[in-house]
Amino acid sequence: MTMQRLDYPATGDVLYSGTARNGLRIRVLPKQGFSGFYAVFATDYGGTYRRFTLDGVVHDTPAGVAHYLEHKMFDLPDGDNALTLLSQNGADPNAFTASDVTCYYFHCTRMFEENLRLLLHFVSTPYFTTETVQKEQGIIGQEIHMGEDRPGTANYYNLLNLLYRSHPIREKVIGTVESIAEITAETLYACHAAFYTPGNMVLCVAGDVDPESILAIAEEELPAEGGSVPVVDFGEEEDLLPVRQRSVLEMPVSAPQFLIGAKLRPAEKGEALFRQQLTASLAMRLLAGASSPFYNRLYESGLLNRSFDADADFSTGVGTVIIGGESRDPDAVLTALLEEVGRIGREGIDAGLYERTKRAGIGTALRGMEDFDDVCVSLALDEFDGFCYLDYPALMASIEKSECEAFIRETLQPERIALSIVEAKKP
Image 1 (tube, rainbow, N blue to C red):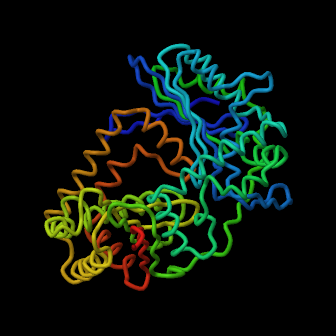
Image 2: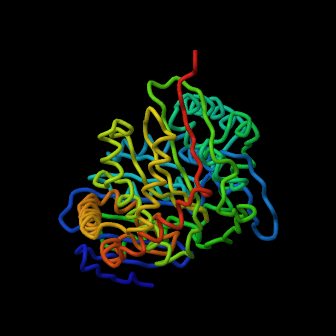
Image 3: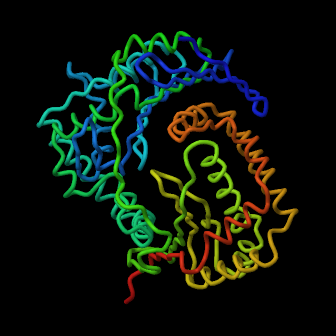
């Protein structure tokens, strides 16, 4: 097959899109004259993918397997380590695991083809032994303990546990010391076989490259068969009410930290989901962004500082609005937020603020697209949700003020909100 050319006038980009014979989706962003190359190899597999069915067999896995697998994938059967080999080739490699995806990537200015072949090879070549898996438990266990000492991490997962009854988004992507102790080499092999198949993955490359050559390299280095795609079970659908509405943790902090959250139901994959994500992000900036009346009023009164932020996160069939920062009185912030939501419900959003905020969002996106490292990651991740990141400016420009007002009014109803606070231990 050949790669299809797609033009994006709003950004000036050209994207080549295709699917290899084994089902691997390939996206190439040519950047003629650029000295750098960037490659992302991602699988539709994250920390929440704990229960799945493959070829009629149901698998239940411990929390933390996806992250554990990411750590171990750099080990090669001949004793080499892919991180070391890529670094020796002048590349800057890394990887990350989120709730809904695992990504392996590198940046380089030379030996691009060699590095790309190595990336495809090690991610598709599992090698685990009982000894190496057990050794990794200690390393990841230390990482888990470090996370437990971070107030921000503790507050985030405490909020998710207030909001969600059973969805695995409640659980840490990294797992717990107890859960990772259950992981064996057989567990890792089973999850690799299920999710690290070409038909469940995407390769995205940016740089001065020929799209057809990327397709050819992928077909040479990866298995000829795409493999079966697992069916993931995230449990019963959540309603929109929280389990509990308030919780306080005591940890060593200099000032109380808080997170206000609410659940929402994501749209179906594709443009509808992308539009919902952009609407949610724009609505949160209009409600509580740096230029909003709410933020400036509370900042001037000393209730908020510059740590304050508001956004929406979408992952594995759930959506969560998260608003938070530091405050001497988090409950007063919540009260003021609900009052502002009520005011917007009655009066609407100021038209001038709406236009300025939307233009600023589009401008930020266009400037961000100059960093093709980030664009490459976004293109890969958005592929799993059925849309293209390069559509951002045009789609954002089409969002109406009324859509943002409806999102705020419907999502941030008092009965749907939860508040998690981390404060210093009382004497």
